Image 1 (tube, rainbow, N blue to C red):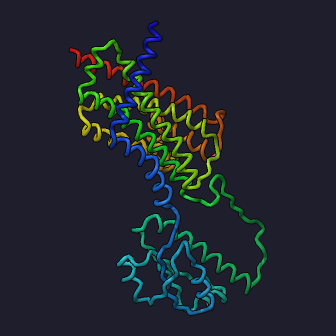
Image 2: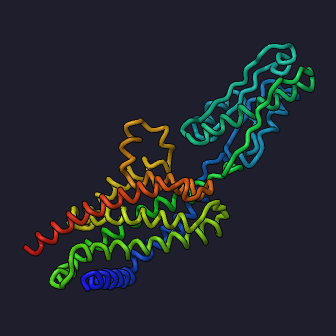
Image 3: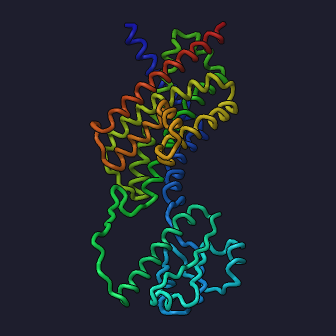
Length: 378
């Protein structure tokens, strides 16, 4: 009878949470935007590829080879190269008109035919950091290929004894949309679960309804568990719909692994993230304070979890510390399942780690919530 009553109370309180959320129009709009517009923008608007980079060429050689190099710089990676004089190079870069300026020296083709090693100068506006890094590599490859092809045609040489054939797995076209959209969903799951659970508790306290609950035969465990499952369910449903209709449908990103397995793992992560939100809500006294705490918590969780940059590139101490964060394991199994098609036999260590971390967070939040309740009753 006691267990049946507890389960019934948790179910009814969770339904009350869903009804309360339904009446909060602004929060509903935020949820819809987070799993539609924000995902679509992250996948399509923010591109990691080189696209329409402005490039100019100072052709001091005026040879067939220099024209061949200019013709090799083609859209969509580069805009049609603009021919300029040497005196226009620095002013053009100072004004931000060109990201790349290539200076082909005089007698470049003649020196190359004579067996010398003339150099082409590449000037890069590094304030355009992502384009500068990627575009310089593209230009170096293009020039190397064109010069190599020219030399092989004019001076046949012995073929190299070995060659390198590169094959990309999981994202053969290196399309940033595949990465950006999925990682944005991972970030939104963490963000929304913490916000919804924390806002639900603060809303109860600010409206005075928490005191009403405390005079009923309800325990802090029942109140907190109801908030966890109700807000977690909202985020989980929104995640499934977003993956199906925004990521796979609108953006055309293929999902390699089991969507059901990913949602099971996401449910475990929601268990820990919503508990974290309730813990923060017991620390904050108002929504503005909750917002400030979120800035201190969300940003490190998203940046250092491996979703923005590989964990291997971070300091070793940071890697060790972030093992205590559920987002680290969430990002790891999300990439394994959705990108590489991994099964439970591969990701079970991450599932287990999130379950253990979630349990610790839940117990800590419950202890803090009980202390808050005791203070209010006293």
